[in-house]
Amino acid sequence: MGRAPAGFLEQHLRERRDAGHKLLIPYVTGGLGPGWVNVLRAMAANGADAIEIGIPFSDPVMDGPTIQEASQRALGSGATPLGILREVADLEVGVPLVVMTYYNVVFRTGHRRFARTLAEVGVSGAIIPDVPLEELDAWSNAAEDAGIETVLLASPVTPEGRLVQLCARTQGFVYGVSLMGITGERQSLAESAGVIAKRLKAVTDKPVVLGFGVSTPAHAVEATREADGVVVASALMRRVLDGQSAEDVGAAVAALRAALDGR
Image 1 (tube, rainbow, N blue to C red):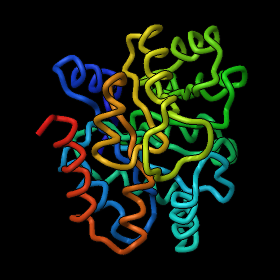
Image 2 (cartoon, rainbow, N blue to C red):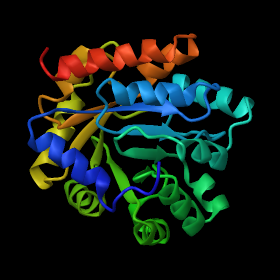
Image 3 (tube, helix red, strand yellow):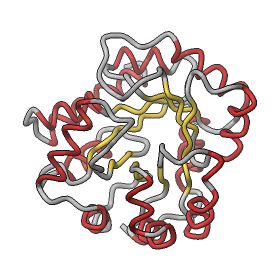
Image 4 (cartoon, rainbow, N blue to C red):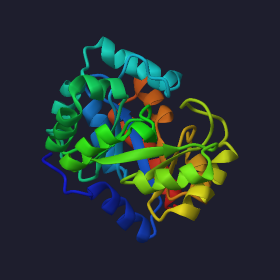
């Protein structure tokens, strides 16, 4: 794919938002089956504005049962962080790619080596949810030197002062956690989703994207009444785990895109 331009993630999402589009960021577990890159391509072809790639970890404290199952299946088939990134290097999808993983993976690889590898394969951003703001510098310095944008998360219980700090430090977008708890499919969108989106929009002009529990096109529309966009993960990975094809997952992404576009 080649190295992405510096700031590509935030620039691309801002341009899409400012042109009147609601942002759609689907998630795919890296290494989940030999055809996982076809799933990623299908997501890009069906209206994704960026794509989050999960690098599997054996103790994913933030992930719910679906993503845990996807991670375990990928690890069981031999997926490794560097192997997943090598596959990303061959992709040409035209939208920013964001890696999500846990700090243990980054630490074992080495901050600078991990950041440089992301940049070399064309990844634009990274989400490392178990690194608190107070301990971010070692990673963020290496990331900035490599041109990688670090996306930070804000939860419904984040105090106002800390919310301002998170929004000042995040790059690419700010990831609003719609509810307290782990990721996963849900029957309805939490009431806290709209609240955290409003709070974030009040303190930052960076794109505000909601995740955790956004499972259907209706949820996506509801979430983006306040937020700029959504991350959809478990609902899509459940399809992969159930044996659906890349084309089927692409159709689900297309349905989300159509709903966000009011079609």
